[in-house]
Length: 121
Image 1 (cartoon, rainbow, N blue to C red):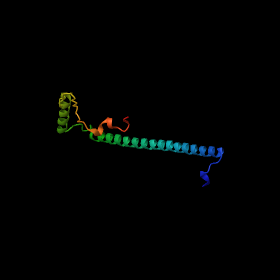
Image 2 (image 1 turned 90 degrees about the horizontal axis):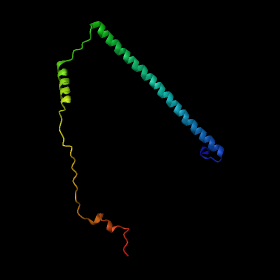
Image 3 (image 1 turned 30 degrees about the horizontal axis):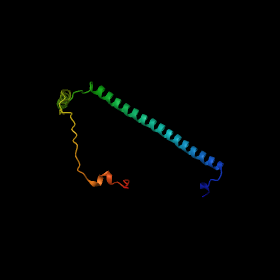
Image 4 (image 1 turned 120 degrees about the vertical axis):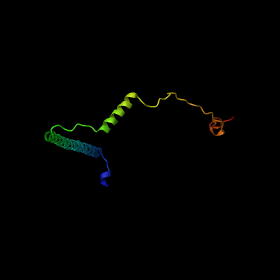
């Protein structure tokens, strides 16, 4: 239990310095970990991109031109969605907000005249 007993100013400086050193070492390790993680993820992204480009290149060279035809049902769905979007088909609202006040009847439970600070003399 001698670690918890600090009697002199020099002990306080040593303990503070040790604490600051621990914090900066932890921050340096985090920076290195994030840097390594970024490099690894960047490398994996490039590898996936190269595989996709290679597969596209193989498809276009083996079959001539890639098959760009879209099925008729997808074309109809896209056309319908665009038509609805551009014609603004939606519910029209009145844009009027109505706030009704509710009259509360008198109740002595919420009356301020019966408060504790009201002193009668």
